[in-house]
Length: 86
Image (cartoon, rainbow, N blue to C red; front, side, top):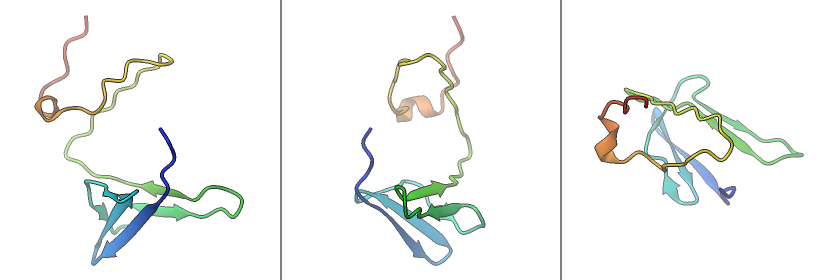
C-alpha cells in the first residue's frame, strides 16, 4: 500500500472530516481530546492519528507472515457472526 499524496482535515462545527487523496473517510471524527492528532516532524513524514468510533469493532489478528487478506468485509458479512473454528 502506497503512502497517500495528501490528507486533508476539514472541521465543520464539532465534527472533523478527513479526506485521503480526495476520498472522504466514511466516519466522522469527534471533537474530543485525542480523537485527532496531527504530528509534523521537520525531519520526517507528517502523520495523522485518528480515533474512530463504531457500535461494533471486529479485529482479525493473524500472526502469520503474508497471511490471507480477504479484503474489506462485505455488507453481507458485517452482521454475521464469525464462522466457527475448524
